[in-house]
Image (tube, rainbow, N blue to C red):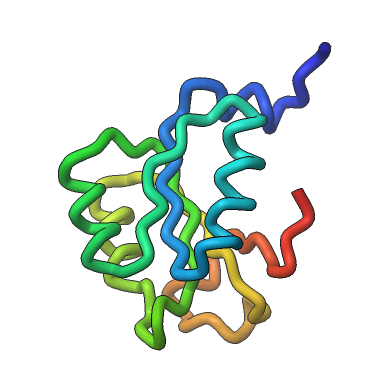
Length: 113
């Protein structure tokens, strides 16, 4: 089996999933694990995500923008200070993001693995 470049780049990478909906988090985890990533979390809240970021190895993160009605942006800011790449998982368009996050790639819901 030949791996795509995107799959090969996830092998042995620790990917934090920040998502408050269990079934969505599970779907994302399965996709990432099939691509060779080690999943960290999922974290359903900002507090849980920040705790994992201080206690676990994280190479990349997938962030749901809204967590139980709270924006995930404090987690995004923490990742930026640590120079850890991340993407937003969202049903919203990139244009609806605050200006300081419009450079961040999005993985649009519903997901297409």
